[in-house]
Length: 253
Image (cartoon, rainbow, N blue to C red; front, side, top):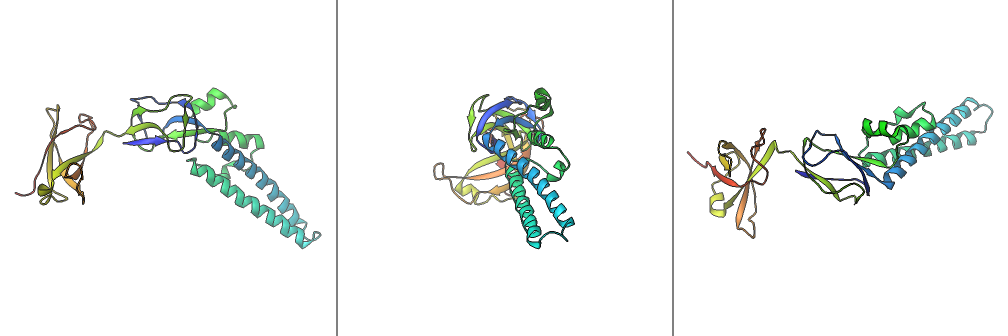
């Protein structure tokens, strides 16, 4: 289970998935309208266009090197290197926001097409078709980091989100973690790799079995118990997260 947060502050512009929906890793859950993202996209577009222009100027200067001062050629080379470095920095800024982008994809495009392509990075096709070329450059996709189900939607349309604010809670209930809370004297004989059996409350026909995979090194100061963990598959979803029950750990034969 995990809270899905935006990587930039902004306003919730679209909610594409609702509470209870199952999503696959990489699917877009929502779109955030962020000024920071819009600025990063614009900076990259300007860098790519300027880089192309300076490259052409350098190539022309190199062809005419026999009649141009050497200092002028060096200035052209330096100007090209400067914009090349800036374009890499602008590219990294978008990568930090979670975009997947390759500057090679923007070669030979017109200025208008470069801007249009950058605006559409990571945006679902349905949204692109809806806006027919007038898509905002500010949109930041909020994507599912793993397969799961949306348990809770925290933010609604038009609400502001910070870079650390959770938009929703996503959980994969097909794989659960079981936590035993054991008294200290019992933990003395518990080890990683031992077999366990667990029966959840109100689940009559299913006994979970498996092996212990972790024993906490510390004692809980409130309950004076030690946590012991085991993981198990829950493909049919019969065991619900946060369910209590009774378990046994086999410490000997």
